[in-house]
Amino acid sequence: RGAVGVVEGPAVGGEGASGFPWKKQHTMPTVIRGGHTDQSGTTGTVSAPTSHRAAHVALGVLRLAIGWAFLWAFVDKMFALGFATGVDPVTGKVDRFGSAAWIHGGSPTLGFLKFGADGPFDSFYHSIAGTALADWGFMFGLLAIGVSLTLGIFSRLATFAGVVMYLMMWTVVMPPSNNPITDDHIIGAAAVLVLGLYGAGRYLGLGHWWEK
Image 1 (cartoon, one colour):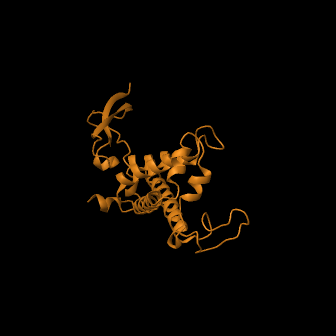
Image 2 (tube, one colour; image 1 turned 90 degrees about the horizontal axis):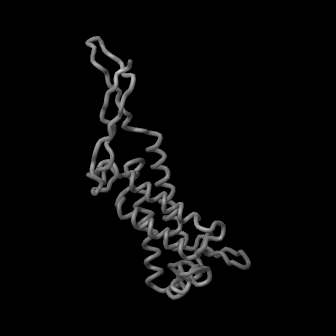
Image 3 (cartoon, helix red, strand yellow; image 1 turned 90 degrees about the vertical axis):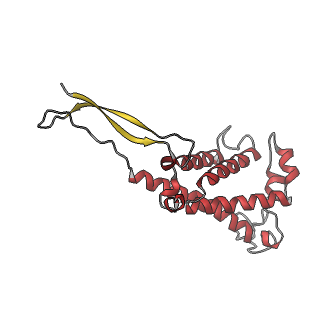
């Protein structure tokens, strides 16, 4: 009969594992059935894997993609580059660096919150549409979250702010147009939460250096 042994698997939680200090570190036992026996007659052990490079690279790529999405939204609204900002909704004419740019007095929140908000929170979003607080808060959030995720720094703050911003954008239009509950904002919030829990800033980013 094969021997049964127990070895300590990879650590779960802890500052080094997830980036969240309130997660206490512990080890997960791994039961080995059918273990081998060496010449001395003792049961051998099998080391559990502690690194999955492909998964780490995937987390890093996902973090970079989401970070760039936030950064690009900031740049497009700042300068009206003609992607989501600076395009006439009626004629489709592009006015790059025109009056819609935030640097030229355009509001990054007025159009969407005033004309696009729908659902149980529409009166709230209509009331703050185009205000300085909404504009500055939105633009600062885009920039801060984008820089943090792209570089892999301030991971905890970026995780919290990213989830909150995605959920707030989700509540602007409720229910979503193509699904009664889930849309790209819910998926984005879940993705940012996963990145934070797994300390994705350490993969293809400056997370290791930042933790020191």
